[in-house]
Length: 300
Image (cartoon, rainbow, N blue to C red):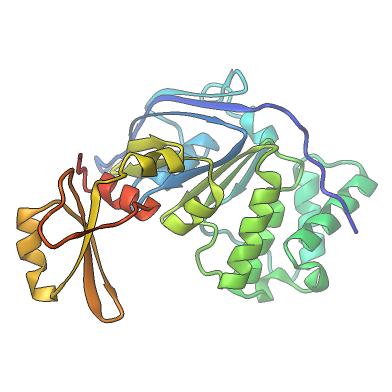
């Protein structure tokens, strides 16, 4: 059994009034401010919300137009190499070299990340391959891996070099339920010792993993806090009713409908309001209700 080690440091990432507008005129990051410490921080939002733009700016893949990003006391927008020494990054899509085994490719990446001691490097590579359940495939060429296996390999490379901050962008996309659970368990295991920023559009991942979260859309942070506290703010304000699909627009015109979905062939709607609407039933709020209410900018 190989052993993974992380430095037990208190880390702090401060994002202050960050702004980024692309040449197309799209304001990808709009005055974003966040305080993130050790643990798993969920950045939740639909595709195109600006999550990936924020991640790329934090890791130094693109400059910001305004604001500051301070990691452990250092402004990483002016000192762009500082955060990279402590960073693990798993982007949404990443390429791999053809004709090279998982073990050899991880070893090569470990050298690039500054793991110069050969014995330490070997131990870390084997430990990570074991952690992501690829140990038995370590001699296979990575380009032959399935999508899920390749994603797990990406997790392993992100954890090389004992990073203090790990950023994962849509990490469970394309993973089957078993692989997703394995990935989430791995994050939970290391998430108390370092900063992990989990960027996703899947509410379930944030609900299962994150002690702190933010909801983002159109480049703006719309809500931020402890998921349990955000849910409690909706206590006594969420109501449910089963309706015919043809009635949906009618209810939308009269009430703050925050979500609608088919359950067992019937349409169920959730409404946010302080007073119980006629023929609606009260329901305990969930993180999905927080998410949809926030995106719909509905205020109770």
